Image (cartoon, rainbow over all chains, first blue to last red):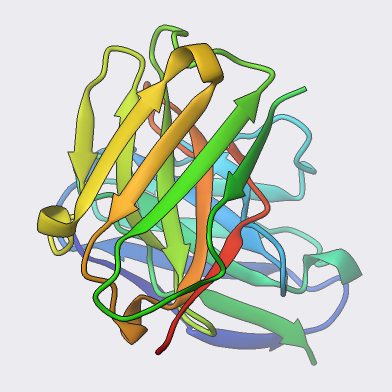
Length: 107
Length: 120
């Protein structure tokens, strides 16, 4: 199985901050990496697929990059509605493991 | 408008079999390169992918749960069914179904989720 790790596990930031979350795969997954946002009590929402493709309707302040084993999700200017938990997920091979999540809260 | 909705029991007893149904609308389960996945999330914990099924009936399962899971679909009813045998309290979780485009694979639409509690 391909294991996923994320760092940090949590962070505190202010509105307007640039935020970067890192995801690492235990082996190369090319660009088969997706990012999701989840708010408490809600289903996850797809933000980025295939490492850098922005899902329709997602604000352009979200961006993804990386390939191989190392990936990043960047929020260019954090907005109040962005406080949530973020998960990466590999889709290179089954089982399609998710990362443990990164919780972004208000500083 | 794409929607998915999970249904099933809210409470099951240990050792029982769980059967969950995902009813979809806005797309067809016969669409080429389209599937449905099941994902769960124990309270306060991370997401865990369980299984998927595609339009060509290709299926795949979580390595650790493979012996307990069965996924199937009824295209005429627009439903995907997941069964999990021998339920245990550690299986208490919110269970989600999600639409799964195959190439590249991702989960683009999710159901609201259904909380299943395993307790005697």
